[in-house]
Length: 480
Image (cartoon, rainbow, N blue to C red; front, side, top):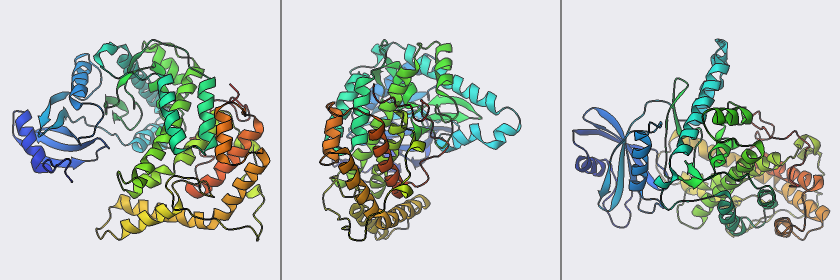
């Protein structure tokens, strides 16, 4: 593990020494855990008690010591959080120690455990899902009842998030009309006003510890802020966090069941349109976060093939956004129904630019994926099973793009001609400033293009059982 700012390298010996300064007891069994962008995580044993140690990398936007104070307050209030043990600064870095909570955190395993055939065979599957949704709703309601004054200097209401991410969209995706359409939809469909509460900021399957179907702890509080209570609920409905489950809420329940359980647990009464606003907002934000991760690689901030692969997931989010806004894909021709390019059409070109528009509309561009993949394979070290799967996935995506690039380019030119715009950026600008209102033709044209791109990025994504729009297919809700 590399160092930061000239400070001592973060390894097991550094963590051991730091723990010995923060806690009383014998420290052993220190080992690395998967960490995030702003912190590194380790497991350790202190006099026989297993704990988790988090160390800031030095560029985190929130002081981990403030997070520790919040966790201590929440734990004292009886909320399901990991018991905070100690925190301090070692060699200029914030270090936080919490108890290790036993249970499952991997999202796909959690959802599978709640929805698998095995859980249905004993006739208790419905009861387990209902109980889990009730526990999640109770945790969310309890969080939202805590005095928001405990969170200092971090307020982020929907309108502020919309303004901030609008700037990101204009910088990273000015030529992606679906993201422009979602931005316009969010402006035209504001949520109902509610008193501000503490929001977890990333409350979803994957940040929950689940043991035997029971929610035992909520993890990862670094994004906690003061905001709208529906933000946490809407984020838990974003399709990326369903992990293949067919239920739109937590991968195992309906949106209505989540709202009912939240209100029954003492939360505010949230109307369905306000929940959908935050589901659209969350999906739009995640699309832009995907592009931000790819841009981190392209700008040299954090070179990693995985970041580029995540960047391409923007197409999945665009599909989800169109579905949330009422597009019924069954009413539109599938890519196989669209006229093929003639033999005389010029082939696609590949630019050397960063996130600029290419003829296929796929970002990041193929040349960057190919370059990063080659470097990864030439690194010399034996890749993990995960990296081998990543290599295979990216390689297959590149092969599909080579085969379908001319068709993508042809479809993009046809869309521009049919809608009477100069290019995709012009279309996005017209949508954002209100010159072009969403209608059936616009949704269908954009939907066809997104499906063509999904055939390259993730062929199995469209039509999967976790595609659960909040309005019946064919009912256009994008008109505001």
